[in-house]
Image 1 (spheres, one colour):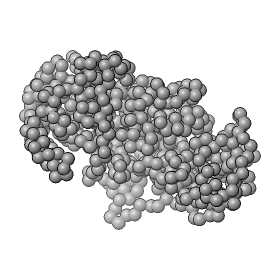
Image 2 (cartoon, rainbow, N blue to C red):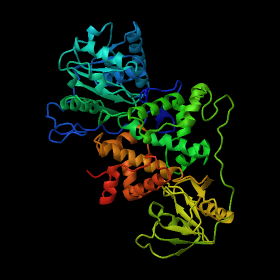
Image 3 (cartoon, helix red, strand yellow):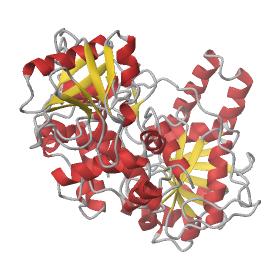
Image 4 (cartoon, helix red, strand yellow):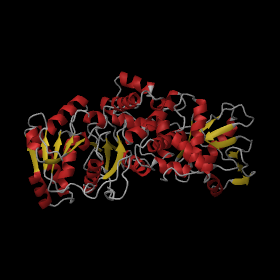
Length: 564
């Protein structure tokens, strides 16, 4: 990876951990209460050893924090430490940059005073604790050094090797990398045990998440101290091991990849896919508009790097359509065009929406509708008659809603609507909440009767939904995306990358998903997620959709994904 991507913040704007397109300014989201340091008796997450009470104590505010690199991330991290009460030293290899960054931080503190979020006395005290450094030697008394320089492993290794000659042996050394291996950067150090990743999200003063990354050689007390310090700074730290993408950038890949895959299969256009994921799936932004905001070059580079880092695992395969966009120089908002046009006066295309259709007078519900179980109640509320068919029998398959001509309206399950079976199908997509969803996607079988399609459209319109009719793509849009997000999160837990709780926390705070993926998986049922993926795997037998062993075990045992 070269950088991590901006992600939608409350209000629909984007936020980033390492890169923000110029001009984007995300509003501050209300920060959750700081996570408490792990108790001394609790086993540390991600395979680390239990910590002592002394090791889990945060750095005292009398201890100096040094930040190397004074770009957006470095200045933001310095401001966080400064507001938390630490003396802070700023260093940049470019002469004069540290002093400029200190002036910028002072100006931001002044704006906090104007907004009533800081007192004038607090601002003055903080400014007095902030010192630009002319050389690395001036960082000698630092208890923690956080690096935020260029994403170049050799540059980082050289910097930390030099720092080891200056700082005390008990000084924590941390990289804010979003793309490089913490283990690899630490490899050149004589004391790699005190080295770790502290991955802040941009803008660091506003966004709560910090990924505390333990490299292969990181000592547990060092990770515990860093975790406790981040919590004391008002952040929400999560622990993870050193894996490509850490938690957020590893688990979030399907959100982009599946949308691009649906587009490449010509099932729907970008505007429709974005609208369905927002209005049915509950996501803040759709993947096409989000990657235009991130920068197609940045997002594609992240995806390609994760794919390469996992030895080209098909689960992480990049999109050829996105690659062509990048090769054409269509990088999104910053270039004036990406998936959408951003020229002056350009209008965002509206998603094709079905015209008004007449709802059927009644339908018959057969079996268990699974995650779509709320629909019969909503149908009855809309004044449409409901007849109950036979109860579900073992092995009878998923339930469905029978339209008057016998066409089966069924929840997306990873298989196509077009089958060799006698019954003709129209598949409908998953919704975060069928009552509040504003839009639903339908995928009719190639053999579906047009009158039946119109009846299905009218049925959902009677429930207050706009309807997008898409091509017969297995899993539709929301169902396949959510199933893969759940599985990627489950695989991360199964491989010891992070705990289930930390994984969900990271995805809620790092990419602002409406639910943590494991919580979402428990709401849907691990068995339902497994079956969707197995059906997709049958259609696409490449390994991309093969369920993870952890998900398979949990589903077979009837266990929740968030259970320890």
